[in-house]
Length: 298
Length: 229
Image 1 (tube, rainbow over the protein chains, first blue to last red):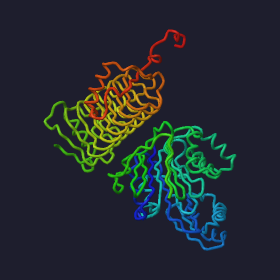
Image 2: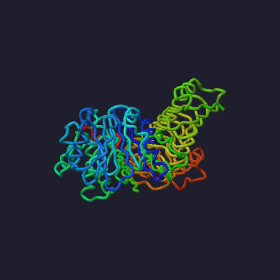
Image 3: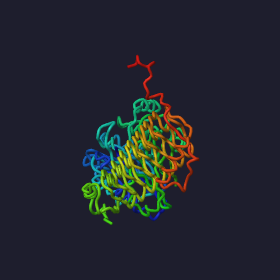
């Protein structure tokens, strides 16, 4: 099963409530997958600045002295905020790669959840309500975001196996379904220089799109390529720095409902996830067509 | 009118109340408010009652219905009226995948569009869709009638048995062993009757439809294939 929710806001006045709205939507989808949950939030980018979100299975040890070590590597003061098992580092964009190197040298148990100008990804094993509470998602504002609650099929129930997967700056992808050719696609992508953290099928889909974008494809073309190159069942929802996309495989047995008003575009695995959104009674509500790419950019 | 607030009283209470009604009852008018996309609303009803759901529903609304008339004043999630036995289900909005799947009887009316696999494996149900239907609709449909005022998606009627399909608009592609067939007077009569009962006679004329059915080459035994068994 798995449950997906997503929100792309068009109305600025809703931005402070993004985290609260997404949390509410995701909790509604809990019974579609209680193994683990994750949320990607895209905040307002700060010029010249970047965010690096890290997770650790030993946060007390790993977060101790981490800030100083990164500051030394990047040569300036940085801001670090601990949220449960995650830590969000704010630093100059030009120093992002240096900071990542410092992080992997600091401790092998530190894992990068996301990196980029405005993305933050939080994910853990557990129910959506507990995961969202651990990270205080409902207090977060932002422009768009994606949430996922997982019923694991293709790989183990671990933090790294939870969605969203991020395989490029400010990119993330969540998935309901299962891919059958992920091993061969992963091999091809590895040869092409992409790196993988897990044996998970969804990470392959995320990296597939990241690789296409890196090669210069538009978001629409990259999403279209999933229809020819990825075999299996999927409803994908993905986010970029300024965009939000949805694509379903041609069989389209993994459910999806969308709603759009002049204030937002929303995605839910089921209509239940959308019922508390403002003015939903008057929204255009539809089921995304099979093998059809939808995306919105700001 | 008996009113039931799903957000207050819960699904189990609704369905057990409806199940306690059998055959004829004097509490014939029911409404369900605040459905909010909940699953399994009014499933397994077996009484001559009229249930109006004021809003959109989740999975399996009105599944296995017998006798009752169930109206959804919104859209329906996957599997609406799945395995319906008799009675009537009317959806004012759209229906998600496999609407009316395996239905053995009764009438399902969808006033918006139905998505993929509408009427899959239908076994006697009548389905009237005012809008379009998605791909793989009427897959392995055994008997019953489906009429579509709009267009049909890919692979209509794949591996069809004896169900009758009528489409007014375009058919993106026909599935294996599904062919277009001639319209005879009895089909026009059947359409006129079903359009009337499907609240669609003001929207379309019987003469505007094309008929599709099984070429009967897949499911009939062919002696040349005997060695394969």
